[in-house]
Length: 191
View 1 (cartoon, rainbow, N blue to C red):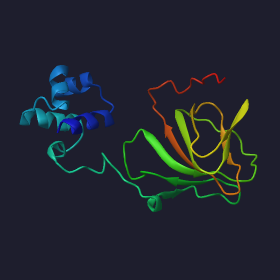
View 2: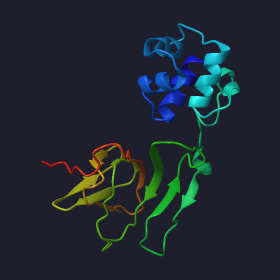
View 3: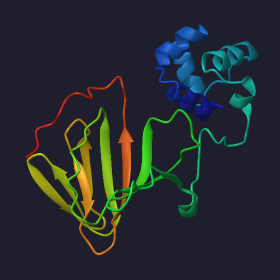
View 4: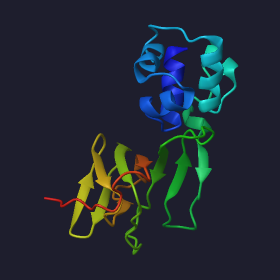
């Protein structure tokens, strides 16, 4: 039960203090429950389940639940916005069936030919990892050339665009994190 309580608390974006207050226990007691040093009473378990918006049986189940772990095989990715014609990027969603996640992972296959696509920006942060092929990440003041194994982490508020530069479209893992509580409007200064 201990790791499950911690994971569910974090999925609900609750601090130890906030969950303890909802349940009516001390922060130190809840910490002991999460670390497996103390077992809650049935009454406390019912309050925990209610505060975490789950059925109490989920706290005691030995099964790994799909909400906590998901495996997506390469052939099981979900096509997303599959190209609006030639020269458009192709996307494949990863873990699309998992609800409540804070990160959005997907595969991107940017177009090969030079595109006049506008820069895009949005709240949050973004991570690019080139799995195969070569690509360019365009930023307002510079272009970053990327090859297999290269990665880029950036504040998504910084305008950016991406294109493949090799004979075949690059395969790029992209993970977007948009935490509304974070400083998403802060654009870093790049060297």
